[in-house]
Image 1: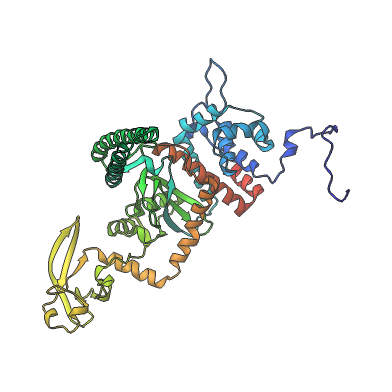
Image 2 (image 1 turned 180 degrees about the vertical axis):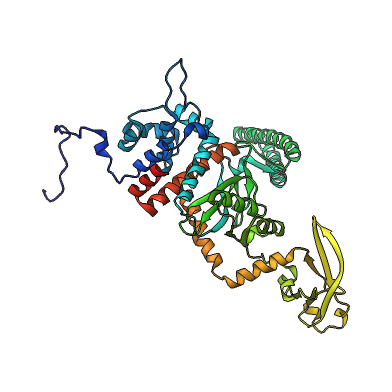
Length: 479
């Protein structure tokens, strides 16, 4: 049948292009990588080996190694062994490196030894975007996402988990001892074989119990009462699904609402976001060169001290308050049902009574004013309000800042939609590129380097999508 597209004979001679450059089109994104790395001050960023040694075998220039990694992360190739293979068979990689083929150990060592410099190169790209006036809207979204580390849940221990595992081992030992006692009552070769297997299992479990007891001592001595055996910096972190926690890192990101570029990022092993708002907002201010910034975040970032710190730094935060009222959950009036009058410094309850200030206390370093009224006992709504003698309402001394933020949120009801559309897509894209295993490197410092390469790759692809290959190259050379 001749109705198919026919391939060429493998033994047919061909006239290949004379130059390697002919294989790479002018609008190929690999040319952007070349332009970006060539314009970097590698020595100023802290890369090792920019000035070659006078003796010994010649080394690869850091620019070549950085190009390999940027190309690899843009194309979802993070393994040093896979990158080694690509340098020998990928035409784009040959063009980028000048047909150099460093071995996988050299490639891996470059990433390991130049972590701070690689992170500085990522920040340099954000500075380039700032010079191109891509952050003029001054609205950013902040969010955190959990990324898996090179550490399974079975190799991570906390006080609760190790206690549960010891109880499981103890129950298994008891069950096998009972089975051994039953097997010893029987005679014959089969019974003896079964008894031997049971004794081996019991001995193995007792050895496991000894290891768990040693780990229990180490867990209780650890500062945060956790130990991870494969990656010592990884920590067990809860997720929204039931029994779906993972051992990994909490990656924070600030994303520009206009172009969806990642302005700033940070990797932590703290399992919550409550203490990250002001830190990430200030990093965004530095990266964009804009003091007056609007930062949108979800309920996980709500903390009075963090919001106050943002206000003091010139950042306008938009963070909804979490619904954690126990009274509201029980079907009674919550604090939001009491209206504060700043002129008279009193609260109005749902029954119309006035709650006045009576005392001030300090809880967890926060100065709280306490308000109540003596008329609760005769109130017809008392059963819907409190089970105590009177309903007391506490107010933080800086709660006016929180009230003003809530008013801004009420006037901008689409803020949370903007946040979702802005910051959740970059996390989804990067996780898809990483694959199911997520991080490949171990320890916090190395994971920070790996995340910076992912962020740099994401931002490069975004800038190419915004400007195109040609204008991006021109902008890099003109910067």
